[in-house]
Length: 222
Image (cartoon, rainbow, N blue to C red):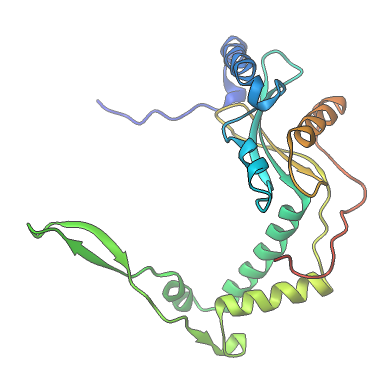
């Protein structure tokens, strides 16, 4: 009888199994120390950003060992600007969707495609069909995305979300212990990441957020 094997949550594994995974990660960090520095591992080649000055390194998924020999962290690290942008965009997008009827939402997010056939008459791909954006009375005769842009600017100016740097646990990860790290930096770098890891460890690998919110200019970032 066939069955679908689900991944077990990392924290539910035996201590021996978790230590084996930590040892594997330690070896990976060591082998990639020439690229990542020897404190953490990142699957992406972030050194490419050094060759592209216009590219800002805003977020990354990193892995590093914990204070407990049987733990390691699977962390999403983002700069505060990204957290700020995500916060006001999510708020506005959810607000806009609530203003539409169920049918309007279904029509708005429906994807129309046309099939492409090979000489034998078999469908080999689909082409996305162009569709004119719909304007809504409830948005003041604006399209959904025009309304979102307008409301984002209003929220950033009049009611910006408060973003605090810090560390938040993310539950139920199958590979390592889930963690979100928000750092107050204009962009990520190896040094910024290493400093965040050191601070997280110094705080006993606990959840924490800065008492003061990060300041942002009251304009929507380009």
